[in-house]
Length: 237
Image 1 (spheres, rainbow, N blue to C red):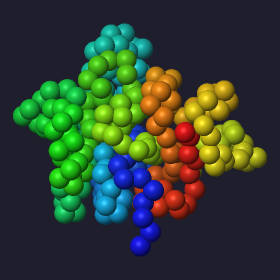
Image 2 (cartoon, rainbow, N blue to C red):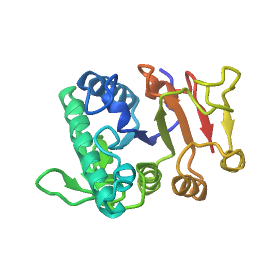
Image 3 (cartoon, one colour):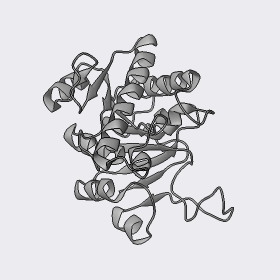
């Protein structure tokens, strides 16, 4: 059996992906399929954490444009990530793998509050960690959370799940001549103004020399394939 290229990773999963074919909300068959993919990756013997977004429920930056303060809107967005994390945790647990949701926003009646040493113990106990609540602060995206948690957990890479199989020279959905990069370093990605993550997240990844692997979550088994060096993806780092 092939060995995974990384021993501990964070998967960044957007909230929008959880709505599946719908435009809003939670699509349970999609959740179950993502849970199966995460479990297949975990079965390779790696330490696995997931940072989930909340865009399928609410996007703080958007509703703040309608007059709500950005701080309040971002907190509402963080609460949306907690709902998504609980659904994902439940799907993983139903499949027979131990999982824990940890939120940067303290709500002990709902889930554990994020604390680094406790999170590391969960990883050592072979649990899948689902990180919710963003960083616990407004003005920071879940992309930034993914890189931050990866650094704190001693991860070797961030796997950014998207709806395309890597980073392209242009939008492949609009430009059929666009080509996919196999590998870039952080500075190349910055110089070419490639939208891989938001600026804060990318700067944190560059500072910590954290590889970002961009792949398509739409292909079943894609997380495990990335870990085994199979399939299509782009490595930035």
